[in-house]
Length: 351
Image 1 (cartoon, helix red, strand yellow):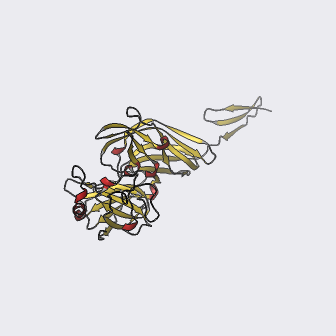
Image 2 (cartoon, rainbow, N blue to C red):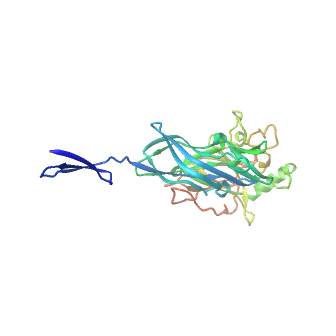
């Protein structure tokens, strides 16, 4: 009996007997490797003094466990990063299929800016080029599991990472992190107006030009237990103090209530500090020992919980709070469907 092999368009191989009265057909299905889905979003913390942080993204690059590099074209995706603050995020990659396994050395390439093309920053002095370290936005390692959708959000803390040098802005990696949306939460802060008034009165001799103090919330890891261990934004701090994990400006709503938000924080324990002297805190230099910056209040510890599906909101009252006003934020993030409010109340004396 002679055997002929024919390939069908449906990717199924057909084996049939030819030249014989008895036809025999055997089908063998082609092996299809299982896959999972991956999404990536980006968010940032608010920043005073700049109106646009223009991003131009080239591609998402990932390396699997076998050393194979995977690329996903972002087609020069362009957007203003400041449009996606706090709990808001911009979807960069939407539900793409990837083979199963571990992925590392992942990053998004960006087009370096010269003030005309590529990434840029607009402030009160005009438009400036934005240079991002290594031309990349790093993404944490992740694992693709069969039948699961992995959603990661990249958070950029502009206050800690963005600096102005020699006519252009620089964005460093030290102020970036990414988190699986199943294991993160959001912090909403309500600020006691008496804290605001007391800080401005105490440091009236340090009133900035224009008369507007920069009220800032500083978030520290749980090993910080008191205000003496809280340092400003800087590089290479001494062992006795700890750098903030995140920094966010405090905003005032139309009714005069002060509040702040920090989004996409890995679940865990933290501590909150407050100062009205953010205008004296340069992200690179030591402004506590060689400058005039002072941390005014220790607002106590806070636990960020992810909840059942990620994205739980935790409300923290600084002092006596402000009566429940925290900006009326709504949850906008991937992979979460429920939120829960937890109130943490601290009324420590300032240092």
